Length: 433
Image (cartoon, rainbow, N blue to C red; front, side, top):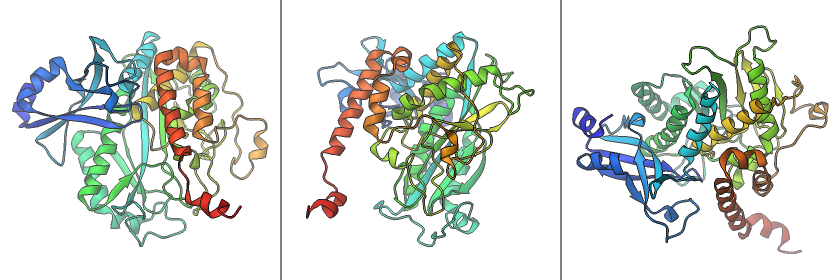
């Protein structure tokens, strides 16, 4: 698509040429429409070291080349268009670019005649602008999930976001108050994994922007409050044939409706879950969600073990319907591109090596975890997760040594920075030791 021509047709005055760094940070340059033709050919220049990429100030310009197919006109500011971009340096793709990492995994699937489709459930909280408390002080029920009154008190923000998705053609189909006070979830149709990732990036930007325009602050932080359920980002996964006319995960003769391909793909996710954890749960705070004790509502709704089940929300993987499964491990801080790339890499390993996901467990993992037997546990903290990722030969082969080493290096620095801080808890408990 010719972006200069579209700018004239749609009265677009400016374009945001955006990319996401390894930590999921959304970076952009604001480009006037008159310059977009050159940017579409050459890309917008960035200094990679100034973002969370493993580069130095000595590296040359990094060029963000926009994907014209990703264009989204901002529903709340229709003279601005948003574009997802791929990163290039010295005439070659930047290995660390999360969008390129995902595209390469999807290309490997395509080589096998597979097309991954996904949907994401992005939970977020609406807070006061200082981030210390939820915005709706009257939202105080012990079990606030699906509370109609609290949902309608936040109608202005929720409806603005939903109206925007309708305008963009995402086909949103439900909005609800989630399990924590001040927490919401909005669902839209699943699509090809790259499209879902681009929309996930934009969704987070859109929610934060519209909340701010309404005097609030939206957060996707995994566990903002100790006693409340955290913000998950569940992914629903299926694999189709190249022209997306046949769901290759579907087998009506199976008890839960999954094909042998689906079980192998799931087996890869199960086999690599611990190593994928630092991608799916990439912050220090993430491990206060997946290893949480019972919250105010009565359940954390988060996994801590590598198990799968049927339509049962106490496991890492749920099979809610024939032809797909729901991976409940990820949280709101996950990089949208690495989230999808991790699913694809784990699934590919499962298919290529005929991984067996093991026995389905139809038990309540919250009430009776001892009945699960000797199942793998998820990492207890970010350091354990990074070390498991770093030692994974599967991920090293899938992503490449440079990417994996860079990601783990930056995440380890993040962990070390956290460890250098002295908390109030430490003062309260060890000042008089």
